[in-house]
Structure formats: structure tokens, C-alpha cells
Amino acid sequence: MDKLLIRGGNRLSGDVVISGAKNAALPILCAGLLTADNLHLSNIPNLQDVSTMLKLMRQMGLRIEQEAGSNKVTLNGGDITKLEAPYELVKTMRASILVLGPLLARFGEAKVSLPGGCAIGSRPVDQHIKGLQAMGAEITIDAGYIYAKAKRLKGTRIVTDMITVTGTENLLMAAVLADGETVLENAAREPEVSDLAQLLVAMGAKIEGIGTDRLVIQGVDKLHGASHTVIADRIETGTFLCAVAAVGGDVTLRNTRSNLLDAALDKLREAGAILTTGEDWIRVQMARRPKAVSFRTTEYPGFPTDMQAQFMALNCIAEGTSHVTETIFENRFMHVQEMNRLGAAIDIEGNTAIVKGVEKFIGAPVMATDLRASASLVIAGLAAQGETLIERIYHLDRGYDRMENKLSSIGAQIERVK
Ligand SMILES: CC(=O)N[C@H]1[C@@H](OP(=O)(O)OP(=O)(O)OC[C@H]2O[C@@H](n3ccc(=O)[nH]c3=O)[C@H](O)[C@@H]2O)O[C@H](CO)[C@@H](O)[C@@H]1O
Ligand SMILES: C=C(OP(=O)(O)O)C(=O)O
Image 1 (cartoon, helix red, strand yellow):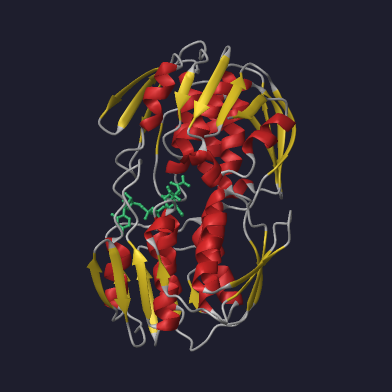
Image 2 (cartoon, helix red, strand yellow; image 1 turned 120 degrees about the vertical axis):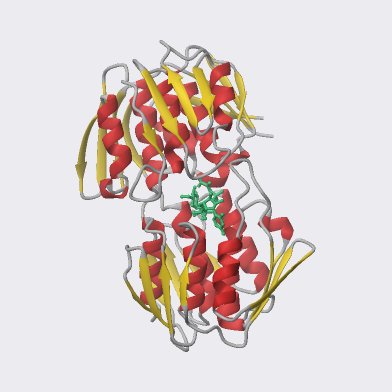
């Protein structure tokens, strides 16, 4: 199993090109199930979850063309034969639940494995199911599979109990081919939801309220092909910004947008980073020890839960004490124990971590437990004195496009070892 070996202490400098967003690319690939025409997609990131999603799509009968070494993918859903997402693929990637809405909307039938609970929380899909049932689907759950059937989904008003990102995306993809009007209240406003909605509009869908918490969809009979460029990955962007803020340096991130992560950028400025931004770049300069910053995670446009662990790494070596409150997932502090192994001083009280800044991390062997926890350990390793060996980095590979290559190119000493 691959591991990452990091020798900490190097300042970072140079340019990094940010990839397309994982959390936009995954639902967008599922939109390929909604039409028999070609979807031409660009800026698809090269990461494990995308490979898994493409494998799932191929199994269903989608034709996929992908030029080697390019970030372009063409999908054709003209010959879909298998309306099923099996456990073997769903268990490695939660986003595979996103095939449920499109399959049901276009083919009236789907069999999708229930995604298992994972390290960050129980993550049920009851809101996806409740919404589809409200649209007239008959849904049963048997032996770990969701069996869904509907002659044609019917538009209706759906109010989800909480804001759910993939729940909104699943119901949106169901609603675009439903009969009549669907109103999604309490919709997620994450930029990745809007990116999916923009693609659906390019395919002929009728959607109003994009970017708001109320999406109004007029169902159409058929969608057609389209071309779309996936938005920049704001979480990859934030991860690199945190790395520079933790170890110091001067780095410009290209192909990204500062207005996708305002809350995180405010916190970085508070921590002492100097940020300058252009239309598609962000420059970060850090020449001091970071200052501790307190925050609570919330839905977009608030501080993203997917950046909590990386900022925790920064706080560990900051001047002062911070309070970090996680409000989205009930078990997203798995990195705390590993950071304490690297010399951090973190206590947990309920859903708040109290982080007392220490002078430095000291390198040690640690274990990655989930995707963003892995990224936070990489940041800790880059800032640490001595060597850090991170095990189980398959979590990192799920969601980052060649992270160690990008970090090496700006001066980090990081290598993949067996
Ligand atoms: C592939 C993808 O886009 N993943 C992102 C998506 O995950 P995901 O879409 O799974 O996260 P949700 O927004 O659905 O989850 C928010 C909260 O609602 C709960 N919930 C959700 C659905 C449901 O049917 N019932 C229920 O109880 C969840 O357990 C969680 O506590 O949004 C999360 C929150 O920004 C991010 O951390 C993930 O990176
Ligand atoms: C939790 C995440 O992803 P997923 O929903 O795919 O598990 C993430 O991207 O941080």
C-alpha cells in the first residue's frame, strides 16, 4: 500500500495549477445518464473517485472517450443497458448515489446499493429517498439495495429536513425530466450544485433560482448533448493555501477563483497570510508564524467542513488558542489524534476542538483516516521538523489530483513510497 514520506521545513514557492472540482465532476458525470446525445466535458480532474465513477458509468453501458493525459471526457448514454450501481463500487465512493435520480428520471427504474457509513459520520440518504417518493417513485430497500421504480416522476414541492448537497443534486437531476414543476426548497447553494445546474441548462433543462436555496424546475421530455467545463476545485485551492500559510512561502494558484471560498480566505487573512487575487488566480504570501483562528463549519457560503481539518493543522502551530466547531458531520475529528501524535495540543469537547498552538510539529508515522484528514496530515508533515510517514493515502488519492507532484514542484520534499 502506498505511503507518503515527507521531510518537513521547506518553504514553498512557485505556481500550481488547480484541477477541476471533484464534487462538481462527479455529479456532472452522472448527468451523462440523462441523455442519449454526447456530453463533452473539460477540466475533469485526474483522481480515483473520477476513475471509479467512469468505471460505474461504463458498467451501465455509457460509451466513454478519454484522451490519454487530457482532462477531457466525452460521454454517450445512447446504449445504457444496466440500471444498477453495485455495492463493490458504491462502497468506495459515496457520490455513486447520484446515479439514482437520473436513472429513475430517464428509465423509470434503478437499483443502487446503499452507501455505507464512513469515517466522518453516518451519512444517511433518507432525504434523497423522501424527495423521490414525493415525486411518485416507489422505493423499497432490501439487502442493502435501494430499488426504485416510477412510470414518470411528477413535479412537486420538496422541503428537505436539512441542507444536503448530493441530495439537492439527485433531486435536481430527477426533476429536469419529471412531468411538471418541481420546487426544491432548502436547496444547497454550494458552487458545485450550481455548476451541475448550469450544465443541465445547457442540455435543455429549465431551472430557475440557480445559486439560491429555492430551485424551480420545469420538467422537459428530453435533454440533448452539451459541452461544459467543470469549475475549479475550491477545496484543493484552500488546501494549497493552508499549506503555504503553515510552512511559509510565496505561491500563486492558477485556474481557480477566489470568490468560491470567501469564508476560508477571510480566515487565512486573519491568520496572517497576504492574499492577492485576479480573475483566475490567487497569490498567497506568508512570512510569519500563523495566528490562531476560530471558526465553525456551515453550509455554503459559510466555512466549508471540507476545509476544517486543513485549518486545524494551521491552528496547531499558530500563536494562540483557537476553537474549531464542526456542525455538519458528527465524526469529523479523526485527524486530531494523529495531529497530537505529531506534537499538537488539541482537546475535544463535544463538537468543538480546542487547539492550543505549539511552536512546531515533530515528524512521526501517522495514519490517514479520510480524505481531508489525509490532506491535513500532509500539511502537518510539510511544517514538521524531521520526517513524517503517512499511511493509507488511498483516501488522499480519492480526491486530489497528483498532490505530491504539485507540492514537489513548489519545493516540498515529499515522495510516494511502497
Ligand atoms: C460528493 C460530494 O459532493 N460530497 C460533499 C457533500 O457530501 P454529501 O452530499 O454527502 O453531504 P450532505 O450535504 O448531504 O450532508 C450534510 C448533512 O446532512 C446529513 N444528511 C444528508 C442527506 C440525507 O439524506 N440525510 C442526512 O441526514 C448528513 O449526514 C450530514 O450531516 O457535501 C458535504 C457537505 O458540504 C461535503 O463534505 C462533501 O465533500
Ligand atoms: C467528504 C468528502 O467527499 P465524499 O462526500 O465524496 O466522501 C470530501 O470531499 O471532503
